[in-house]
Length: 308
Image (cartoon, rainbow, N blue to C red):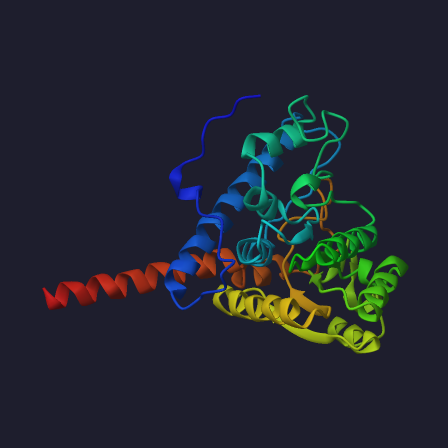
């Protein structure tokens, strides 16, 4: 199936040299992809409401502040990843045309799964982006195996696998973290803590105070990350990826993210406390970054005008 070429604005997909010295350019690139991802996710939601996307649709609105920096910073030529249903922006950066991903949601013959599956249950295995699996823990072992294979072939690769706050309590994930730790497989386990496992709040999911504490049980380094600040997210992830690549050891990141829509399109979110959506909207990484870029752009314009 032929698709229209994307605009030049979306041709740059890479910050993998980890050079963030030109932070303004890095932030502008991040915003470009975060905004694009939000637009596509919203459009998919509209298509679902129109009955053109069947089954359900799980959006990543509020998760762009994590998925986009991860995708931009990784080496798409050798690293291994498995995105969840919140990582559409990562799919768009890693490989494939927007049309192909939309075809997946529409379950037509031009989709990666040849219409055998809809929604986000797809990937690009040939380019080491492994398909999303609803039972999120099952994706971890795939990434570990892929990274181990790359390393055995002399390729200095790392892997990134995503976990939800709810799925962090499942057996597959703990088995995978144990294997990665015992055999020194350089894998970054990222827990997307959006505070609800479907409708179950984190306070009812586990006894530990923070999920980053799980790292100590496997002798891993553990990092807490607030993804509402895109500059800080880029710097923390860049350093983490560089560390794992050098040491060959796994690492755990607990990333505070948002779920600005329900678990899926059919979720009414009636379990949320009053005012919760408004609180989340105030710390949404996308508008925060937009406001920062506008403010700093205005300052530079004003400075140039004064010198003139």
